[in-house]
Length: 373
Image (cartoon, rainbow, N blue to C red; front, side, top):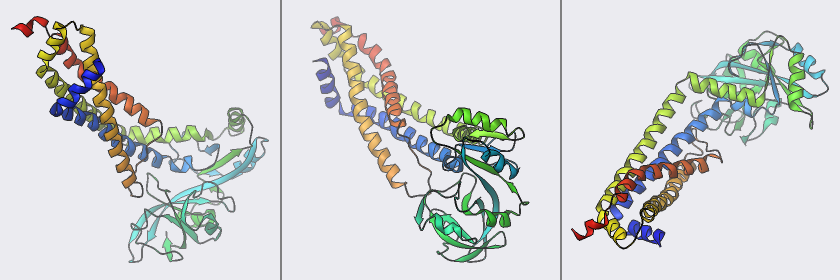
C-alpha cells in the first residue's frame, strides 16, 4: 500500500518527477560516458602488453611503463628457453619513424617488429587479410582508424617509413596505441627503420607451458635474469596504465568531471524531491492524522526515490548504450567493462537516496494537527 501511494505520487506530480529523473539520467549518462572514455584510454595505454599473448616480459631495469624500456641483449632469449617451464621466448622491437603519405607529407608512427613466423607481440585482429602478410620482409600493417590520417593508402601500395621502403599488406582492427599510430612489421624491417644495433631488442616475450604454476615460473625466470626486470603481463599492464593515469593528468581530469557529474545529479534530485515533498506536506500531515507512522512516511519517500531511480537507470543506460554503439567504429576511445554497469547502477541508487534525505527530513516534520488549521 505504501509503495502504491509512492507510485501514485510519482505519476501525479509530473514536474517534480521529471526533474528527479533528469538528475538520475545525468548521473548515469554523464558518469558512464566519462568512464567509457577513461577505460578506452586505459586500453590504449597497455594495448601491446594486453594483446601480446605472453605470460611474462623481460625488460631493462627500473622500467616505469612498457613504452620506456632500454634495449636489451638477445642472448637472454636462449637463457629463458633453457628453463623447463618456458614454451617459447620471442623478441619484440619498438621504434619510431615517419610514414610518407601519397602527397609527400609525413606522419609520425610507432613501429612494432615481431620475429617471423610466430610474430609474438604482433597484430591480433584484422579487417583485411591477416598476419601471414607480415611474413614478407617489406610488409607493414596500419589500423583502419588511422588510414585517413596516413593519407588513405591502398593495399599493396608502396611507401616509406624512416626512409625505408615498405608495402602496406594488411589492415588491422583496434590496434591503436596511446603514444601514437601503431604500424606492425617484421623484426628485420623495424631494425632498418629504427636503426638499432644488431642483437638488441625492446623486450623479450615469454610464454609458459600449460598447466604450470605461473607465479613459481615467474620467480624462476627472474632468478636467471639478474641484470633485467621480469614482469608478469598483468603486472606490466597495470604498471603502464598507472604511470600514464597519474603522470599525464588524465586521472585528475576525468576524476574532476565525474565528481561534477555526480554533484549535478545529486543537486537536481535533492531540489526536485525537496520541492515535491514541500508541496505535499499537507498530504503527509493527513497520513499522520489518519494513523500513519513516521516509518510509513519514510517508506513512501524512499519508495518514490527508488521508483524514479529505476526509471532513470533504464533511460540513462539506454542513452549510454546508444552512444557506445554509435562510437564503436569511431576514433573516440570507448570501452565499458561488464562489471562497471552494476557498480554505476548501485552508485546511482545510493546518490538518489542521499538526495532524498533532505526531502525525507521535511516529510517527517509534518504534524497531524496542521490539517485542522
